[in-house]
Length: 147
Ligand code: FES
View 1 (cartoon, rainbow, N blue to C red):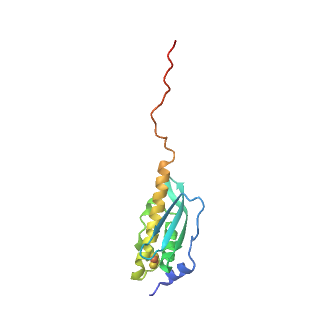
View 2 (cartoon, helix red, strand yellow; view 1 turned 180 degrees about the vertical axis):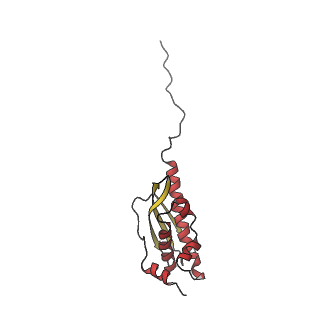
View 3 (spheres, rainbow, N blue to C red; view 1 turned 135 degrees about the vertical axis):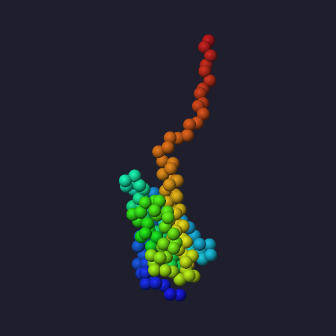
């Protein structure tokens, strides 16, 4: 199996690897066929009314292609708005790596999937922030009768 120079480079020198403390969102996906697993963590900042991925990290237990695609998806997504990052596909990741062997294309599913889950996680948390708590039925103690 022939990997591109860029795949080998990112496998040997991955960018943005490691756990993030207090992420704003994170997502984990696994490949049931091979057992590989990947987690993406994101920090989000508002910039000109847009939610921007200001920092991103990954942890991957997997093959060379899984690690290279993990690195690349974080490199592509960093600095992008959540809407732009959500549109990143496994093909975008593979293209940035100058291609993946056909047998290894499925490895890039982890990268796309984990990033999307992290964004969804952030959105679900952000959606629940700042909302007024649901009103509950008032319970009042029965009035005492005047004597
Ligand atoms: Fe499992 Fe590559 S072989 S992700």
